[in-house]
Structures are given as structure tokens and as C-alpha cells.
Image (cartoon, rainbow, N blue to C red; front, side, top):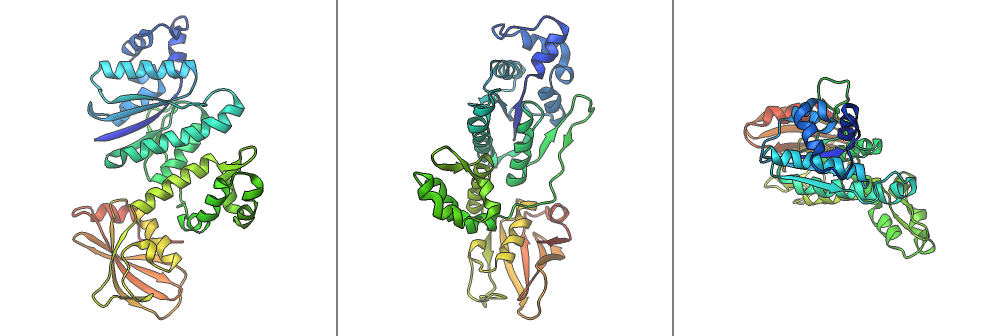
Length: 347
């Protein structure tokens, strides 16, 4: 089953207005009739995008719309049309504060947009989830792309002049959750403080690059929209953290001792490289610690060695030596995993 999270704008109303007098928001069903007459391709950007993804009648479709009369009207008409065509899992998700009022948009709308989409992404974890970022305010595209990177889901876009749907390429970056992890307690202290004076000590300790995650909320600090997204993705990544299997000797390049979760490994570079591979191919759930050498120094990177039934083998070079690991993947997915993760991963 698939889940489609679609940012919904007012192109349906705009296109309908070109062929006749602008429909009133009270005229329920008029835009549905326009869709039937025009077809998915020509009626609106949202359905033009969705037709390329070929949804099944059992798929979940979430229409994320603005807190405006026209935005809600278009989303509700698209929903009514799809349900009349047999798509029974269609939901309109209005974002409170996502209006044309600039102050309200910034202070309330963006936070609520991130929260809404984060909730939908986490609800859809058991399905194949995609973001369709075609309609709505321009800022929705930026935040949809960010959420796609953080949650490792594809983001699609189509322009009215395009004949095909475009999957926005994965950005050549991977968010360093270890940096957020190191600053997590300071960020918590800043946003939990009752006022700016009480937050000042923790704010002063916060690295400059982490300060974009908090913002001024008047008499106190709160998480920014980006901070909300990063926190949600961080929480999810910890919940789905990788398991580790050690050799019988319980020895690794880090010394004696057996680890059960990647978070327990003391080397930050190792944690970051392995989590990067996990984000590149989500079905990886377990890392088997194999041969190692505590000798030699190397800039941190992972190099593909070989594969076998149900695993890929990588050599992880570290400043204190190297550690061989096997990434366990579902049987039959070895080639797909290798294609996604690649030959070499460098920090």
C-alpha cells in the first residue's frame, strides 16, 4: 500500500476560472464537474502529479491545504472527486495559520506545516510513502524537500510546462544527527526555560550552527520550523536505530565489549557512517561486526568489499584502524541495497 502526501494549492480554481466565471466557494460540486470534463492532466497540478504515480484505490491520499477559503475549497473538491471515483482513503488536512498574513504564516503556519507533515510521514512508515510537492505556497516545496531528506522519502514535483513528473534528486548531503545529539540537551534547556534570561546560559553554550533550530518567541525561545523537523526525524532515527551483532570474542576495533545498538558505539565517525548507510537504504536493520585491525590511521570512510545472500560487506576506515561490517538486508535486495548505498561513503 502507498501513502501520498500532497501539498495542495488553488490551481484547480485558477484553471476552472479560465473556462468560465470564477466559481464561488459555496458552489459545492462545480470543481468536481470541471475535473470530469478536463481530466486529471488539465484540471489541476495536484491530479496531474498524482496520475503519474498511478495510485491504487486502497492507497492513502492526504491533501495538505492552506488555512484559506480557496485552499480548503480546492482540497475538498479534489477529495470529493477522488472519493466519487472509488478512492476511499482520501483526507483533507488543513494547516492552521498557513495564510496570506505574513506574520501568522511565519509564527504559526510553518510550524504547523512541519508538524502536520511530520505526523503524516510517521503514520505512513509501514507503507511506501511519497511527498508530492506541486501545489500551495512556495515555502511548502522547500520544507517538503527538507522533510524528504530527513525522513528519506521521495519528493515529486511537476510544473505546468513539464510533460513528466520529476522526482527531486536526493541532496548530496546527509544530516549529521550526531551534531544534533551532542547539542540536544542544550536545545532542550533553551526551549524549556520559562524566559530568555533563564535560557541564556544554555543558549550561550549552543554551537552557532545549531542556533537556527531555535527562534525568538517573544518572551522566550522555541523550536523553529526546521528545529521541529530535525527533532522529529532525530526521535524517529533513535527509535529505528540499528542493532549490532558482535563476534563471539566480543572484540572490535574499539576494544572488548559487545554493543547492542549503534548509539552505544563510542566512535562518532563510525556511528555517523553507519547511520548514513542506513538512511541511504532504510531496510538495513542490523550490523554484524566482523574482522578488524586497530593499526593504522585513515580519514573516516566506508568502502564496499563484497556481498552475499542477505548482506553487504563494507570496510569502515577510522582514525584508529578499520572495522569490517556486514549490513544485513532482506534476501533478494542485495543489488538494490548496493545501488543505493554505493561503492564508497565519505564523511
